[in-house]
Length: 276
Image (cartoon, rainbow, N blue to C red; front, side, top):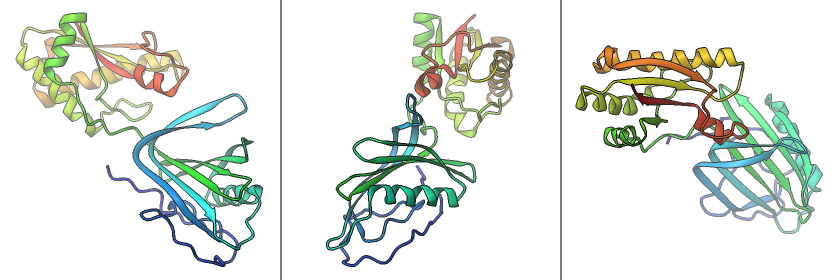
C-alpha cells in the first residue's frame, strides 16, 4: 500500500538540542510535524493499517482507521524539558497554522490534544500526549478505508446463497454519498460475473444498503442508485444477462450491525445478492 503522510512541515520555536542523542533506528518524525527541540525518538511504530480511538468530547470518542504512526519522544540529557502544556500548545498551534483544528483537549495522566488536519482531500488525525516526566508521544492516523486483499470468490458466494438465500458483498466501493463505482471494485465484480456465468439459471436481486447517516429519503435513493450501478456494470462490462439481475434499494432499513459505531456503519454499507 502506498502510504505517504501529507508533505507538510511545521517548524516549532526553539533552539537546536543541547546534547544530540540518536533516534531509535528506523524511526523518524512524521511529515506533518517536527519535534520539540532537544528531544530524540526512543520508540516508534509504523503500521500500514490500524485503528485508534480518539476522544472528541467528554463523553464521546471516534475510531479512525488508516495508516498508523506512533512516535515517542524523550528529552535529551542536560536540557530543561518544557512543561507538558507547552508541548501540547506547540502542536496545537502548529496544526492551526496549516489549517487544522484542535478537536478536543483533556488530561489523562498528562495533557492530551486531539488534532485534525484536512489537506488535498486527505484527513489526518493526531493525538498528542505529554507526560509529566518530560516525555511525550504523538499517534497519527491517516484516515482511509482498508485495501481489501481478500475477496469472496464465486464458490463462496454460491455456497452462502444456497444456505441462506443471499450473500453480503463488501468488496464493492463507492465515493461517499455517490453511486459511481470505484476501480478497486473490479475483483469482486469479476467474481459475481463468474458466479452468474457458471450458474446460468441463477436470478438475483442486487440490493443496496446504507448506514443511517443522512436523511431516510436520500439513503433510499442512494441505495437504489448503487444497486443499479452494480447491475449496469455487470451487464455492460462483464456480459451478465440483464434478465438475471434486478436492482433494489433498502437504504438503512436492514442493518446487520449497530449504527452507533464506525465499524457497524461500515458493515451496514453493503451490497447483497439475494436469490429471486
